[in-house]
Image (cartoon, rainbow, N blue to C red; front, top):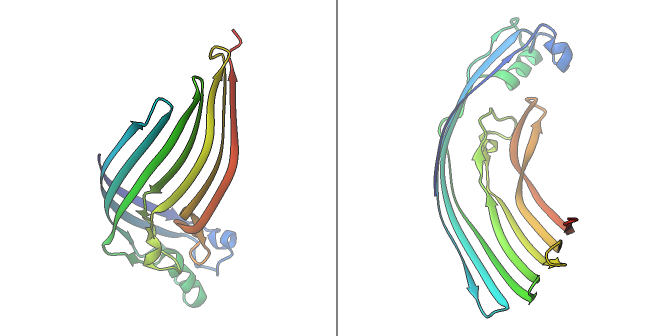
Length: 228
């Protein structure tokens, strides 16, 4: 598998005369100020994968799958000096520069090797009832924010992979000459480096970051019935 992306991004903000009043910033900081920036992202993604089923005997099946993904990402983000607005100094100038000051990230690179895999053991309880147990690991691609960083600095532009480990036990069944279907499962999932939006109050801007770990556990029941 191969994927290529070449993306250009233009960001712009035009503030009206009431911007400071609306944002509670010092007088003259943002009002009538214009800010324009350019970003660029290039992605190469390569993957090798495969999956196979071993029929151990007429009742037992073992399914195994593996995928290796390598990604090479390069980007830059430039924001030009703001234009317009009144001549300011002190707190108003500091507020303007924090939100709209000139910025050049230089070249940003991100290289990731992401393995993922699946192992499922299934048992045919009878012709129409199947029990199974699954272990899996998957990774959501990391990335680069095409935005200007705030207090966290240039490091906040990089997003690491999101990694999920999952275990599931379940049953799939058909009844009454396949007119009814009942599927049920219990699962537990742990995500490392969960990707989520964050907000930087110093620049009043949002960006994507690795927020931490997330755990999900539960049970699922699915039923269908063919009336006619």
